[in-house]
Image 1 (tube, rainbow, N blue to C red):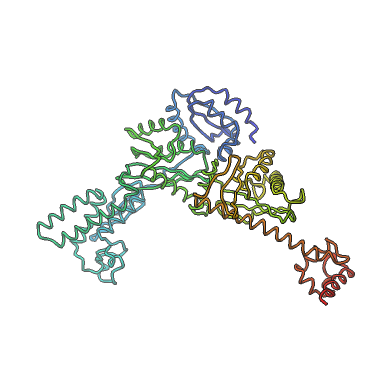
Image 2: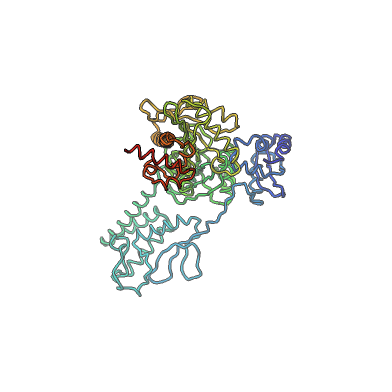
Length: 610
């Protein structure tokens, strides 16, 4: 723990309740974080109070703070401007820092008689004609592919007229996506006309291209060039069909940016969808260390639009930051006219936001080697239980016994929605005899947390605390375990998994009562599988204990064979059948055995067989 916390908190409590910028330094004096505040005292003192509600990233930052300074501003807006300027200047480690490293893309038109259209990431020193630069490589690539497909231009590496008649045309000709000039049967006039129309399409967009082609089609019809008019008509139909496919969700998509954020409590992802003319023209994602949701969106917006000049009129978010009005003012000044930030709750715009957030979740899932479906179940579970973060690491417990004999417990672990079998643990109940599920569960949790105290520096196995504890049982089990957690000072969400009369999952229960999950299909299935798994693991251990006890009881009936020799025999021969079939020499070779005890065991089994 940071030894200067008390000193820093005392200094923070002496700050004025004025807007301003605060600057955190580490022990070497290097700036590690810069933030703005509406009231400096309130904001800065939060860092040096309780660490319980902070994200892991904030806790790490606070651990490294040695001192801080501040600059008072006349308004929160001034503080925002100063914050952006200082972050650009110092690039602090714990701020969200984005780099405009996408580069530029170009549309290239080759300098030859039979011209070709391609997209390039760099402008080469050749005689080709380049259109651009464009910031969105996604948009350029998509546009060039569409132009070549609609106007049936070749995308192969053949050179014309050198390669006329050399080989048969490729698949694109047969699916009517290429004129196939390689056959040598295409007139240059027709090919060149298609190239010019494709260039016009790329420069003017689909709507302008349709207008121009419509005029050409009408002119061709008046001149009785019906075949040419029919070809132009087909091009117009292809452009319109392409435009319809590009419309995402609904026709009321604005010229806007849509930003969604997803975090699993470890890493976060900002996904940005950029729409122009009602079409998705670009998308980007940015991976960050997990940050607090409320603060993260504000930081991301300032970082993202500090490195971009093309600010849209509308920005749609999945959650509104507290300083939304200040951000709108700042963005409006950068754009030159009003910018609107919204957070839709329903309708097509809300669907866009959810689509954006789902894609952010997919990025995190791929990084963790999981699927977005697994993450969506965990997020839904988080919302149902009112957790602060997604439960990536879940421990579940169950008790098993037979009329109070061979009391055992099983602990299973789910990590990122999947069983982590290497972390499963078995417990033999030691503190009492007889049947007491509540007392058994309390003993298991006591022992588990004692192990945590011994191994917490390792951050592995028992040294890692779960994000959620689920007990197989109802309110009684929860109330029996809750005091154990409180006594150890462990703040982990605790719930029970309740079954119905047919031993099927029915609900989740906590201190506040039962939470129905029957209507939540994905969560219901997830909890049911977990409850079945922990029950299988616990009862499997119980059966193993009973089987061993049965074996030992039959061996200890033999004279000169006590519990120690019985254990040695079972460990050496594995089964009672192997012991029965062993000869005298094999019995004598077993550890802990003497000649007399070997003879006693041999006679016991062979006399029994007579």
